[in-house]
Image (tube, rainbow, N blue to C red; front, top):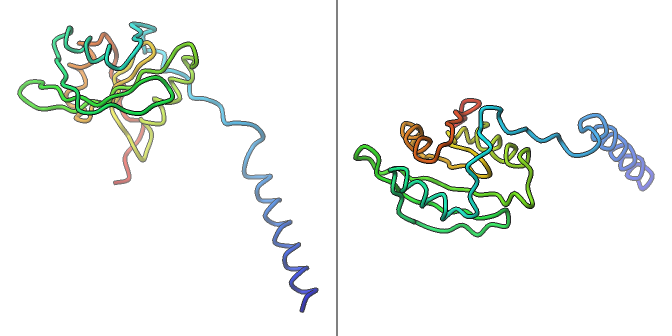
Length: 155
């Protein structure tokens, strides 16, 4: 009985290691680059600066909450656009620590299923406009571009 358990454990370990070796390539996965249509600027130092720029651009946004972030800064705010309240989640990545590809990779993760968010982006920042119908107004206010979801959400 002891030999059977030992043999079974050895076979299970061998099969598991073999499966891991063929399923995953060596090294980290490549980053998804920033989409080519995303302008290099404007850049902002903080999410508060993005929120202020939204107001200057005609889409005033009221602070709801700040995010604890080690990537830079983040916050949620609500704006009134065409009479509708629109929540926005703002992320600013520190360009001294993150490349344009790092930022592109972060954006791609938000645009792909299961999230499938509509994002407004430029420079070193992006905004998830929770109601995608109003993303063009946010993009215009911030001089960014609208990035539509890359796939369908699963629910």
